Length: 203
Image 1 (tube, rainbow, N blue to C red):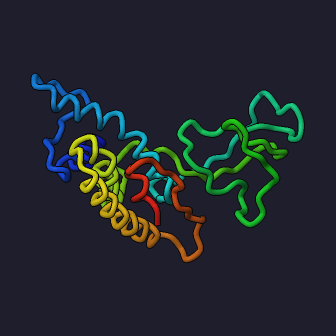
Image 2: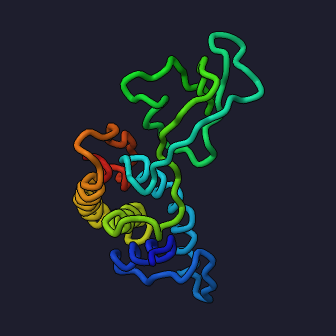
C-alpha cells in the first residue's frame, strides 16, 4: 500500500537518487537527511496542488455546514466556516444549477441560508485510498519538484515536467471514467514558479 514516504522514495529513485525510509532519516553522512527534509517540506504542497487540480473521486467530500456563532456585519444573515481540510469548492447548495446567493471571504462562506450544503475537494492525506494512476502522478509531481534541488539539472527538471503532464492526463482520464457523462467542472491549476513542477499540472 502506498504511503507518503513510498511516494517520495519512488520520486527520488526516478531521479537516480537513493530512497528514504522516513521523513526523519538518521544518516551519518547527512545526504539522506537532506533528501528526507526536502521530501518532508515539499510533500504537503505538492499533494495539495495535485489534489486541487482535478475533481478526484478519492478527494471529494460533501457536508452540510452549520452557521458560525458570529454573523457577518452586513450583507448576509450567516457565515459558515470552511472545513479544516478544504482545498477547493465544487458546489454550493444541493442543486448545482441553482446555487443560493453567497460570497467567499477569509475562509468563510457568507449566505442567507440557515444550513449550507457544500461539495468540495479535501486534503486527503491517506495515499492508500488513491488510485494507482494518481499515485504515479504524485510520484512524478514530487520528482519534478525535487529535480533541480537533487540533480542541479534544468534538463532533468524539464523532462520530469513533461512526464508529469502525461501522467496527470492519464490519471484524470481514469478518474473520470468512474463518473457519469455530466460531472462537476474541472479546471486547470493556475500556478507557476521558476521551472517548478506546477507546469506539469496544466492540461
